[in-house]
Image (cartoon, rainbow, N blue to C red; front, side):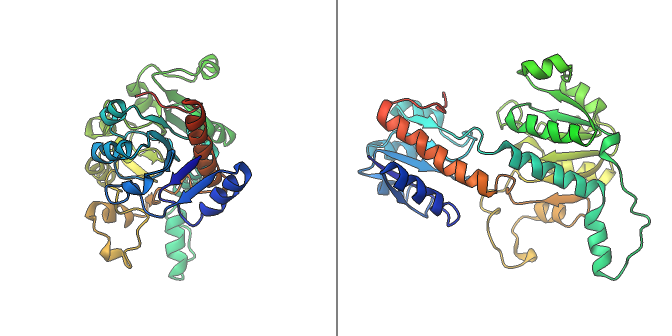
Length: 331
């Protein structure tokens, strides 16, 4: 059995080598991402393990299948960038890692919210300039707030536990209700109900055609004044221009974003200086003290990276051996 792993970073390499030695299976680590320039490197392998933000296009998937590789294991959750028609046409088996560390993402989400509520970015700036005064930057308390969680999968539920630990009231909306949460009476009937009640909106939904730019001008208008917005999920969930307008008007008190709708090619890139960042809307947000931007790092912990690598390799091994895997994605 031979597996090729694309886009392997230095921080992933030790976990790949550990798995390879333990399983006695050859794994070729390639630093480059899977694309039309690297797809032929898969020739002669039984499966491919991949992670990337840019699309898995029909051209790349067709060529991968021509090279005899139709066992594809993603080291991440999202499959919205995989060409479904090409998957079906070529008979691909695709797996993802649905829960590499829900706690990692939940912890950063709440950490960023607490920074916003306690105005730490403002105090950091003031202190850097020798200003040790308090006013006018008085804080808010999470225990006095209602947090509206959108989507109650593993990450959403992990975040809910932390919010509840702070003493916040938690409500939630999801098309699919978790039985335990249902018993607790946490769900509201509609997103409009959540918007009307929540002081904080915490997004944990996957990106779909139905929820593209779900937080738009119309949605913001239905929210409470001075609402806080958290998005560690997918950039496509928020209309960036609408968010900027809502921040400018004061409708939104602040936001913490670990994702951005135009992040591909920007996040995880060193541009050398702030001015060199080639996205004016992103820079607009980054300049604001009531907006916290992180470059898609909520997942980026030692535990999560190990799980992403080794769970994906386990999935690929299962596909090669049996044609099935526990984390197979239906297209």
